[in-house]
Image (tube, rainbow, N blue to C red; front, side, top):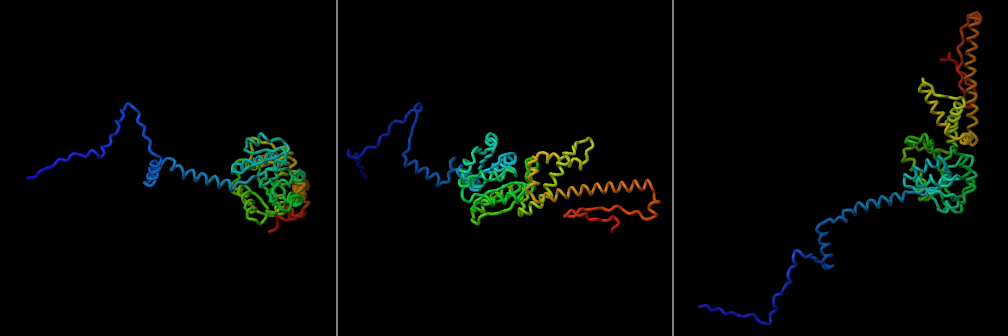
Length: 370
């Protein structure tokens, strides 16, 4: 028969722990985890792939930071000397591309500059002490030499890039080569448009440039390319040619265009109720050229050695047209007065068409020729 023995617990054994009574639901319950436990839980949650709100925002912030760094690396500090209409016109696009703009001019354009996001300097020395990477000359042709003489080159960085945007090229090129220190880079450019023709878009408009003197260092070549990229990204038709070539072509296009526009303005061309397309084109020409100052037109004539030749050819062409008109009129009158008896039965000679050669000599082409 089995017997069971009952043993009493020893008095030395540890009693079961007693927990404090739970707080009532009417009381606030506040539990704080130790720091080590909180850190351990955060590591565990990340290892399990749990994404917190701050973690989700990091990739976007990182991409934004990279984009900002890229824009800053590509940006230039550009100083515009001559902040008139054309300087302001260029500044708007430069600022939109993320470049830092400084400006100086004889007139006070500080309010306009502030509205455009440009720092304006009344003193040229203060502007140069900002050490711009690019100095852009947007002065009139007639005042270019005076402005160059006033620039404190010693306050600029040794290899600063100088850019001009004048409508003639050989004249400013020679001035820059004469007055600038040998360490400075020179880029001669001519945007073949202005505030009127380029107010909507620069796409398809010609931009002429000549890298007159650019250092071989990678940084200097890159700086020049970054400046030209402003116009390339705007869709300009980039044309690289020498300053001499530019002036030769410009005299036959830009100077002739300005001359005809001013002639028609003096003529008093006015709109009518029966305008043709061709007549509308002439009115647009007068409007475009009338917006430019006579100082600009005079500069195109005075500082482009090819302009005098074009002006003489225009004069000879006008005289040739008058001779053709009056010659034909003379033949008609004689025929009406004397009839065919004067001709003696001979075949009437057709009028001769004259075309001026490049040297101004008339080239006679008979309409009877095959």
